[in-house]
Picture 1 (cartoon, one colour):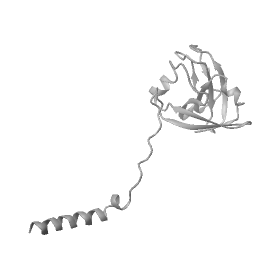
Picture 2 (spheres, one colour):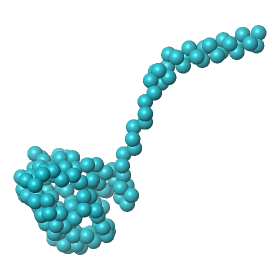
Picture 3 (tube, one colour):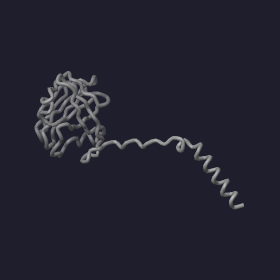
Picture 4 (spheres, helix red, strand yellow):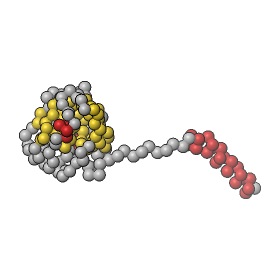
Length: 161
C-alpha cells in the first residue's frame, strides 16, 4: 500500500511539473541594470551625433528630484566618456549652477526634439551663477569641461538616450 501511495504521489508531481509553464520553458534571468558605484544611479548609453560622427557615452540617469538635486556635486573625477543626463518631463526651461561641484563641466541643454539648444561650456566649479537653457529642454547632459569642444558638439547636433 505504501508503494502505491508513493507511486501515485510521484505520478501526480510529474504530471504537474510537465504541465507547468516554468518546467516547459526556462528563461535566463534578465541582466541586472548597471549602476554607478558612487551614486547608485542607473547607467545607460547615450549617443551624441556631431559633424565628426557618433560619440557614445555611459551616463548616469538623474531621474528623481533627489538625484537631480545631488547631480555631480562633490565628485572629484569623471571618465572622458562618462556623464550624467537629467531627463525633463514635461519639457521646460531650466538653469543649472555649479554649487558644490568640484570638477568643471560642460552643461548641454537638449530640446524636446533631442537637438542641442545651447552649451554652457567650461562651467566654473563652485560658481552659483545660474546657467540658463535657451528654451524648453527634455534633458540636460553634463560632461567633463572641454569634452563638447573635443567632439565638435554645437547647437543643432542630436543627443539620443
